[in-house]
Image (cartoon, rainbow, N blue to C red; front, side):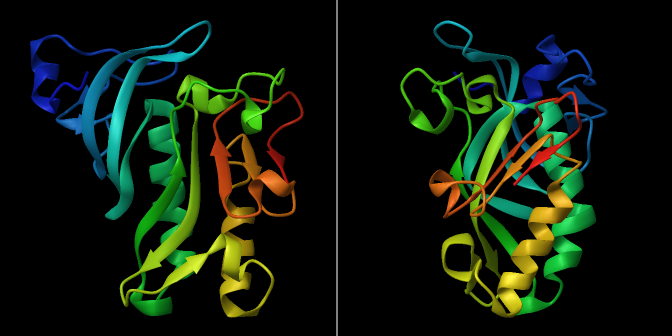
Amino acid sequence: MFFPLVLASCGLIGGDNDAPDLVARGNLCGVPGIEGTVIGTVEGPGACGISNAVSVTSVGGVTLSQASSMNCKTARTLHSWTTKQAIPTIGNAGGGVRSFKVAAHYACRTRNHQRGARLSEHAKGNAIDISEFRLADGSAISVLNDWGGGKRGKILRKLHKSACGPFGTVLGPNSDRHHRDHFHFDTASHRGGAFCR
């Protein structure tokens, strides 16, 4: 069930352990430039679900192709990476980035949909998958089609590298066959630092 942003003033405010309120100073997740709505609790079987979820539609002026459910930590990380890395890296290519094609966001599932695998970070609201960076001129930088080389391939490699650190896990075409057509970004913490392939 979705709740409009204005309900925050009626008491629907909370955050993940290291997050500010879902709505602070009139901003979703306390950050100007994150647009969307407060969802609240997303319940799921077992360990699935998000205790304080938001549905994000835009970050830093870049639209998401579909409203994406996540926690505020992930929304703030996506916004920061978008404004500090993605927008400058793409620059004026095709007139600049206008939207991200979202391949996946919250879903109660295992890693790579494999039976017996550990629970995916998607199941906790910690992850988003992006398959294309759509540009102002109507073209797109596609992970599937452009990863190999050329100018757009170089942009993709820079985007992948720049996400390593802000996000705890970054997976792309070099990681395995499951990620040949998208980037997986999540905010999981790893003992040895960010895990990027």
